Amino acid sequence: MRVAIATCGDKGLQDVVAPDFGRSRTFTIVEIEDGKIKSVETVNNPAENLQRKKGPTIAKMLANKNVSAVISGNIGPGASGALEQFGIRVLIVKPGLKVEEVLREQGLIT
Image 1 (cartoon, rainbow, N blue to C red):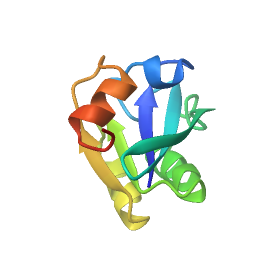
Image 2 (cartoon, rainbow, N blue to C red; image 1 turned 180 degrees about the vertical axis):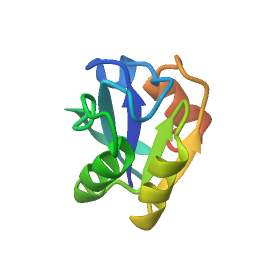
Image 3 (cartoon, one colour; image 1 turned 45 degrees about the vertical axis):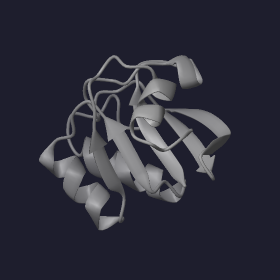
Image 4 (cartoon, one colour; image 1 turned 60 degrees about the vertical axis):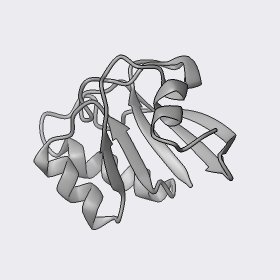
């Protein structure tokens, strides 16, 4: 399973969840297998400077990276719809929490 977390920087598992999906600076993509982290990749938000259509742009990028779930502090209706079209599940969590902490809280890693 590959999970993308909307994040504020490039600190990997120690980064924090961004308050808004479309305005996040980065996405931390974590590959998880059998409750263990296999890999961590940080990618810049491809839509950070767009005024419109942020959600669909990001959703397409995440789908191309084989992401199956997204975690963010908030996701607007346009982005939610775009993610749903790609079959990407959405989890809303409290912003500001560390990536690793959120993955544990959601039961994705042990």
